[in-house]
Image (cartoon, rainbow, N blue to C red):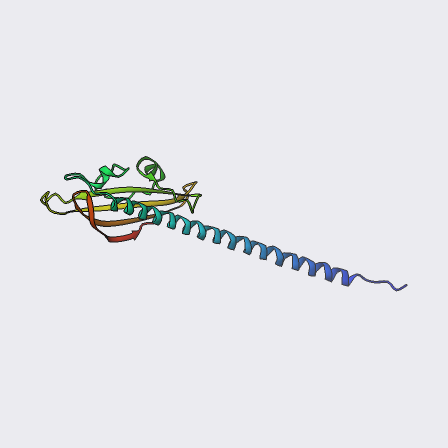
Length: 175
């Protein structure tokens, strides 16, 4: 019988080790892309929840008008300071001031709103009254590790108890 030196076996083992390294590298890349896609989906869900909360708050404003001398923040389920100078991003602030505005289509994402308004005091009571409002909405995951904060400033023209017109003046994404 002829003696074999085993060079083919050594070559196959080296080749197999290289294939294993390529497979491990490919799996790490796939896992990284999977995490990136999950983060993008969560970010989109947070944005959609915040936008849905903004829309729900504006719809709520459309159905009501403040009485003379009052503002929307007294009739909405949120009582807040008028025109806060800064928007808080801290989750503890939102727990204390925000109102939950859950969106059933996006269950693991939480949405909260904060409504502020400022009635124009220079208008006579018998004329339609413009009421300026600012709604801040925050959509976040359950762990509050990330959040989308959106803000709308608008004006509603009130005549008695009815809103005769409502307009968004500005929209911005804060985070």
